[in-house]
Amino acid sequence: MNKKLLFSILLLISLLLNYSYSQIGTSLTKTGTTAAQFLKIGVGSRALGMGGAFIATANDISAVYWNPAGLALISTREAAFNHIDWLMDVKYDHAAFGINFDDFGTIGAFVGVMSMGEMMVRTVDKPEGTGEYFGAGALTAGISYARNLTENFAIGFNAKYIREYIWHETAQGFALDIGTYYRIQFLNETRLAASISNFGTKMKLSGRDLLVLTNTGPGGANIINTEHQVDEFDIPLLFRIGLAVDAIKTEQMRLTLETNAVHPNDNTEYLNSGLEYAWNEKIFLRAGYKSLFERDSEQGLTLGLGVNYRLVDLVTIQFDYAFQDFGRLKNVHYLTVGVKF
Image 1: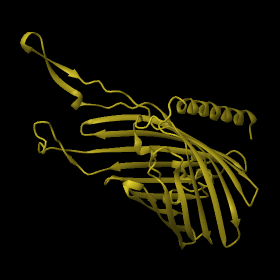
Image 2: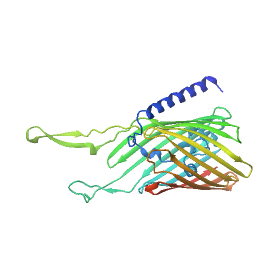
Image 3: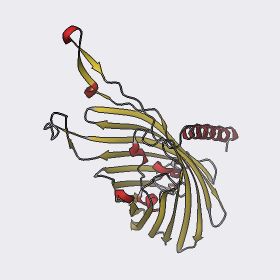
Image 4: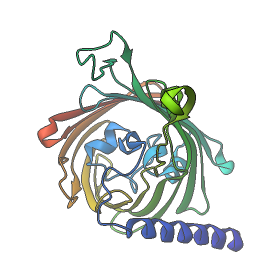
């Protein structure tokens, strides 16, 4: 491997980590101060079943969300479709595809859409509704690239577009994700990983509903167009580091344990921990705990299961389900259907 290339990559990661820590250190929590909160909704029932402790285990197409470096571990082609029944009747759907080109690396693409039901427009004069309805939602779409730089070290990137809307207002932004993955032949196999998600632009709402007619001059004789000024907000920057160990690894079974430390720019630091038990890499049982030590967190226990079914020699279908306890906000259910071909 080119030593100058490796040095440049490590320098870039170091600079991004320093930026991440500087953002984190500016406040104790900064809860509710970032836009595009839907970017924090985890993708992939396998990962969520493990409590979101996944960046050092990510070796399938769901790595586009957790750690793009994991895409380098895809052997051929993979696609996955995720549906999430989120909180308060909010739905989130995500699809991703990746293809490995041997020495060139892995290229992927993804799109995620958050949606919810329409709501009535209410005003002070008409609190029961004006007869109009408005909607709100969000979208992200991007491309990925990952490559093995050595037999045990990989790096990956995402570039993505972000959009949120409510009624006639929209906010747009762009962001990058970067991840690394390092494998050590210790205790069957030990993996170290780090990733930074949502390193990008600020977002600000704009649209026709911010335009108002204002009467000026003596007696309000003059009417001019004015625009309400709104603030711009950072997007939720996340820095994750993870350690995974295959505590048991035989021809018939595998037990993987992982812990991740997460540093967000809009909350306190927390830990995710989880495990995955695999029988013949066909049946999977998972459990974890999410957001341990996060201040005032409603998140907690997660459970999951999965099944691999080979249709023909080169085509495998995988079904995964995960359940997450959200405290007073009840429960969240995740469903993933994936295909390898």
